Length: 267
Image (cartoon, helix red, strand yellow):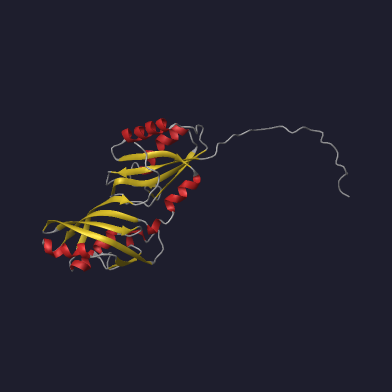
């Protein structure tokens, strides 16, 4: 009724105005150590103002972007540490998605060379086990993340003098259950909730009358700083309530992130 059948042949040929070729994303994984207490994991920008000049994400990705010649990247990791917390031991698993890379094929030796380039560029971080992975493999980094364990070392101050015997009982506490209300320091970006977390083991190392080091193995997602100082009673119990003293945390290190990914390489 409205068009002829069969339709008439077009009088003009189709003309390609632009052809754009894109590569699928490439994924790179590894583990990083952070040795600085003045380095955020991701760029620290508040109200459009940059607070610190660099980040773990940028120190790693700038070299990957240059070698893969990608348009952009997306960074993810198994948890994150605060700006003033070091990540030691075998490091924290991370993955980077490189969007529309111009180069996609790298030998294992070339990846080792790229890893060395990253490690030589800064004394604030080191990476290991750098490798190409699939998109599907990255899911293993997030699987059961809250069921994984993490090990920490905290330097703690007490207002009242302590002796070795005052903290010795901490070594005997196993599977301590905490109720942690969302910490005040992250309440602006995380919903208010009470989360149950577990401290699996603790070992106290006496230093002097007002200082000791506490080694902890915990459920992932536990707020360690708040467990030490109590966060105005928002974390119960806490080290202060256990010792019946005012306590605060001076330094915190992540000693291990117990996620068996990515595969360990012969570095």
